[in-house]
Length: 291
Image (cartoon, rainbow, N blue to C red; front, side, top):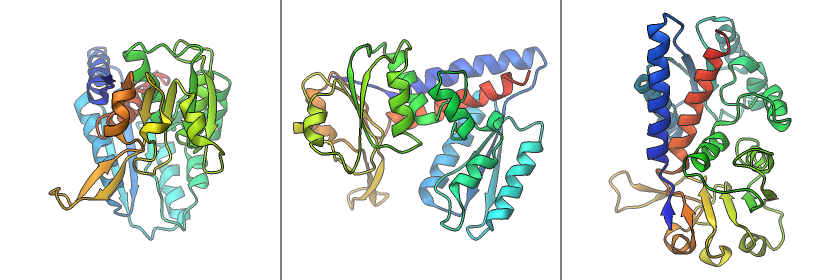
């Protein structure tokens, strides 16, 4: 069993980008600039946005963090995005999800210019991804693909089971794994809350991508020997033994499942860091595409 170390791959990805930014500086060209919009004070969102801003600093990107009140109107938020769309110095825009219930995620995503949509959620970018065209790929699936590439994991002809069908992870992940590409060419099964015989389907999988948000949902008896496990889930579970008062759990019962695997991602330290690395690659691309 080998651990897929997201921290290691993320660091290598960021180091590579840092060299490219240094080259831009040497040539007197524009430096990538990411604008992050945070609505309200959700603890997890604060952590995620903070990590993204920190990564920008490590690589040499410019970053702008815009904090907005929880009760901001939808129209006001859309107006803020419009201003960022018009700002020629801003290359990438991300609005941290989830948003308060009175704001439509769909309207927000559709308002961001596709050329600045470094989260890869805009329908125009999703459509290009489906067709295999050059575009921004949603950061978490993109990060997973970068990890598969780094570890040179053979995927061709394998049966991949994706648990979860969200537009952020499950659906794009299924498309990328099935595409005719070096780390695609899988036969993909998408499963979800209405899937019958889920455990049986998982036992047939060479690759399982667990992205449903239920701690330790994937058990040892759902996994065949030698399977590759990608655990996207990260949930705060109360734990009095921790200084923070909680532990971070993935969607996979790591302790029980890992002995059976050929490769597995840990939580934390697996997919999470790769999501940020992929976002940085998208932001660099957004800048370079304009040069």
